Image 1: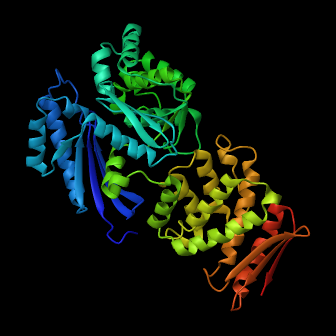
Image 2 (image 1 turned 90 degrees about the vertical axis):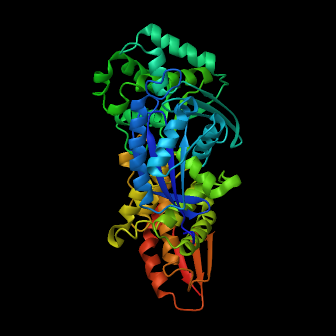
Length: 497
């Protein structure tokens, strides 16, 4: 953990919701969320010529009082409150900003469209493997379309097609008429310049709500929304269902948030039209966006883009759960040696090796919850924790590795919808290698100073050398031997010197 352990409070003052994020710095490449607060204040509702209504300002001020109280409890190093489209377009925004400052002590800084897009880009690129593609960030007031090439933000467009504004301007009926839907689709095409993109990354509350509905419809085995991929055909069916009934009927659709039932159809139509115009077959959900991007700017300044999302995320999860990083690195080193020595036997690839290394570095995350059930807790933390840059399939495999590294036969039967047919064998091999590496490092770096592994004459020979007796390590290896032999389908010999 970073020596300073700075705490940041970031507030997104949006057109639909006001959301607080309280984050503790773990290192210069990781932070953990320790609290949040949200209120659907509808600050941007009913704006005529951009003017904030008295009711909207009252709701927004009340929400900011709650936010200020929660944030103050953590004595943050800084509080950053950022206003977006509702305040950008409001001629009376200053009145609201002054009222909030007088009542809470928090000064809201109204972001430009470019600043908002850049923060959303940072939150997304630092939590996904996005390299070349586009980000669709839809809020209550605006829609940002951000192009990314080689992980760098190339350009961004911001248009007033957020869920609230699109609903109020284009949908006069509930449910909307076919003519109204066509008008909204036409507005998307006219107001945005959309280039072909193979995949889009979706950000915002409406995107997460759509993902929640899709997850329920699929009976998806993971609860994670971050990283969920929505296929174009799934979104098309969902749009039809949302447009077919009025708000009261939508509230009965499993997964639809009651406070979004009236504005979700417009958001879904806008997102679908962007996908169609871009020729994108998939929309990958990013659970991180503006608030996290602002936090990264405070943490990392000019170098806010992480050099390696996976490494940063693995290190952050380990640090947040009290893992001894040095000891874990020694296990990872040995696991890598064993993988390389048996590569011709198991025929797994570099991506599998990377998963093995990641699992070795976070295998101890369940320890602080309950030593005797640490493996199960570790799997749960992998599934539900702040682990970014991995696909859902890779999350399942990592969870299986940390759960079954010590003993037992990995069981992926609950995750048939996520894994591939060969993953059962893959996890069996990697878990056996990880368990063997952990046994060799039974007491950390000492007393085994040198590990050699080589396939010789059809047998995997592992030689351990060190200055002190290693009875404890040999006993642990004896418990792993049959499992490793079964996984590799070859005899294994452990020798000490």
